Image (cartoon, rainbow, N blue to C red):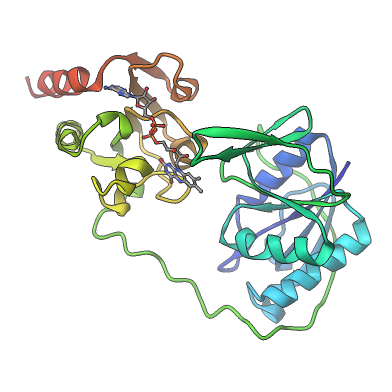
Length: 303
Ligand SMILES: Cc1cc2nc3c(=O)[nH]c(=O)nc-3n(C[C@H](O)[C@H](O)[C@H](O)COP(=O)(O)OP(=O)(O)OC[C@H]3O[C@@H](n4cnc5c(N)ncnc54)[C@H](O)[C@@H]3O)c2cc1C
């Protein structure tokens, strides 16, 4: 099994998510090479061939040129798999590459099961296991699903590739407005999940956050329901946070939520289900009804 990993580069730097593709290849037991549009000064720590296109010449994203470079690397490596992150870059480029190769595509892979790919279905309430039948398959990886056990290491062998520019080029990046809340800076975050049951119960989460001198956050269903603003959402399509203390209240621990908070120093989860997946990343799992536990803890802190 051979995998071509597509690295990512933004604002002049290699993105750390590039190493998630390396972790995926390792977990799969696949040989790998990498293709990257970036710069010699920001190469990955990687023990293998890196086919390098110049971001200075091609731009950090030009769909036609980046596709041509990936296809050129495919031509050289003849991989079974072409591996992207499930990022805005991967969302746009992976289907273009799959179409050009006549390859199958499996999107948002969150795990492996006997060499087959596990992907979420029905808004991640179910998961499917997919074993592609196409000779070449393009996959995209859910953020945070694969990680290297230690620091990445190695020095790549660089081969330079070039391509002609296309009609679309990147103008720039624009940060989403945070509306005054920067969860990334909070040392304590108390987050509300669907387990709060109704919007009125968000007040008890906010009260606990205040008592702990922190901020409150939310899982996506709470935001989708309009109970909290999007700038409070933690996860792969929300904010990535690294507080000293993360208190997850009524949050099951879906991979997309974990992707946003798994680097917290200490995680406490409050859940009525002792088997909830959040228990696997929590330092402390409190098996309780949050409607009883959260106000009781807030009262204790006040007293
Ligand atoms: C492309 C994509 C991107 C996504 N991005 C994000 C993201 O950025 N952030 C995010 O959070 N999700 C994201 N999701 C959604 C994610 O897959 C999950 O659906 C979501 O995280 C589940 O939220 P939850 O844990 O609040 O709800 P649920 O999964 O419904 O869990 C509710 C939990 O509350 C517990 N509970 C119920 N009642 C109580 C009670 N009284 N007391 C204590 N515990 C209770 C239950 O046991 C359960 O574990 C994304 C999904 C997709 C497909």
